Length: 313
Image (cartoon, rainbow, N blue to C red; front, side, top):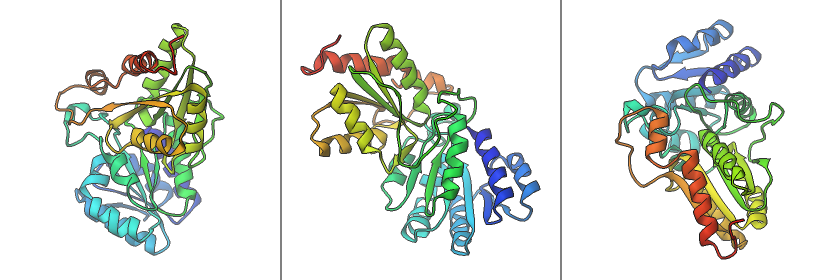
């Protein structure tokens, strides 16, 4: 996703002189193609994320479209006061870009894990939160972020994510994509958890369980209509996210279902209320903390067995 995002950034920088790129001393070589097409519109503020966001807000006030890029927890958590006051409260046209969603930076420990960035951004009024599911969608989401007037948080994986979405899927802010339409259970995911949600749907299909698979490239505004329609059809929903189960994507789904009156049962799969202190690569941590495809499939089976309205087929 990182490389796909930078392809989009170069295109945007070449097409629109208002587009700026900023970083907090991260991936300096990645910005060289942008500098080549947009000379004078790249800033490295050093290891100073609060300054990164503050400068981006200043550029936005001057009519620019700044992309402020850093590791996800640094641009959302470490600089949260600047994000809240300088960007969100002012409605500044800043595009915050957080790379390394979830436990992508597995071996670097909890300081580099993005397990609360969705919660920290979706709670801020007026902030749009995007979480693409594969590299091509990351590129489309970057273009959508640039076209959107107002603050955006774009959450990216790191690199090496597989292509999972149809080439013609498109990207509309606030619109989920239905990838499969089944009648037994709904699996709804966002961001890099699409990989695990897809694996779970495949496993359940082999057992004759018919899955509706929904992908949410936007966490906020949340596409409640798509989720409620699927929940009404299946009566059971499992959410999957590479994030804490507290206040993230699953919580947004829970809020939508609770207020809809549709009566579906829900199970949230995500990182439990804990930091990931174990050391290992992303796939190891995903498995260890119960975020894997088999874990998502297991949650769906358990939900079907426990729900009196959703017997296992």
